Length: 249
Image (cartoon, rainbow, N blue to C red; front, top):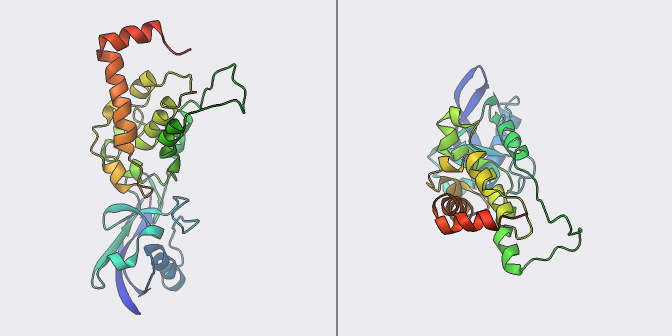
C-alpha cells in the first residue's frame, strides 16, 4: 500500500533559506528518513542530511518533524494522516550548515569541559567494586546516544543564545550527575555542576526527558538529584559542616 505524501522540507544554508514543498511516495512501514532518502534519489539530489545507522542508536538523524525534535529514523509515517503535510526542519538550537544538517560542535565543546572519571589513586584497574544498585543507577544515563535532541529542545539554550557559554545543557549535566553518583569517583562535582555548568539555569520543565528517544528520565533522575545536592551543600547547615569536616579526598 502506498500513497503520495505531502512534505515541506527546509532548504538553505547559514546565509538563509526557506521551506520547499514536495510530493513523495510513501510506502507501508516506512519512516521519515526513508522519505528523505527517496526525496534525495528522485527530486533533490543535493539535499543535505546527516544519518548513519538508521536504527535509532547513532543519534545522527536528529531533526524537527512538525515542530517536535525527533529522530527521523524512529518516526514512523503511520503516525501521520495521509492527508497531512509533514514539515521537516533542522534542529533550531544549533547553527545551520546546510539543509537539515546543523553544526553541533557546541556539544563537543561542553563534553570536553566535564572532567573524566577520577577513581581513588590507590585503586588499580580491575579492582573496582560496586553494588549492583549503584550500577543500575548510572546505567540509565549510559543509554544516551548523543542525538542532542535534549540539548535542542532545552529552552535555556534554544531561546537564549547568551546562555550557551555558561550552560552545558541537560546531556552534560546528566554526565556530571552520573559521575557524582558513582561511588568510586573522588572528584567533587556538586559545586562544579552549579558554578561551571550552569545547573541553576535549569528550571526542570522536563522537556529534555520528553524528547529523549532512549526514554531516559533526565530531569527526575539526574538534574533534580543534583539540584538537591547543591541545595543541601549551600543551605543545610549540618550538611555544610559535614562537608567541611569530611570532604572527599
